[in-house]
Image (cartoon, rainbow, N blue to C red):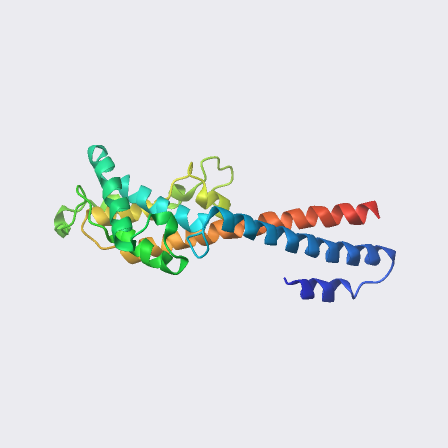
Length: 218
């Protein structure tokens, strides 16, 4: 909800408590606005203008990591060097200095770079073990689940201690010779969006605690 939306909502309240509420909402939005401006300035100092944000950099690193870990252990070091070198050669800069407008292009390239040790030819249908494509509901359970997999949140999805059946399935399909580039790009883009959602939730939680404290003190 925007600042105007909050103001419209609370201005309809009356009484002593309402006055405190109004002051709290307005003060909190001003505080959040200043804090967000400060964060933006801080991020710009860490990353050059128009360069990939830390979240976008993380998404590319996760994609590279998932591809490297999908091949044999003895070929992983070479695969990692191949991917990072290809990105630098294509864009002319390290991945951290890639322009924000080229983020999706960078993801696409990272998903398509051929790596030694990957299965590139499609296996005959009769030779494929169909059980490898089985990912029942239990594979989506958090590592510390108590009530089944109903508690799937952005934080659970991004927790590296939990399995990622969506990526495991793509790795199996890739080994069998299928091109899953588009699916990989969308999944890692959604991871990036989930990280942004978590940051928004943190901001809203901070705002809620602040306003509750102001109202209770009043």
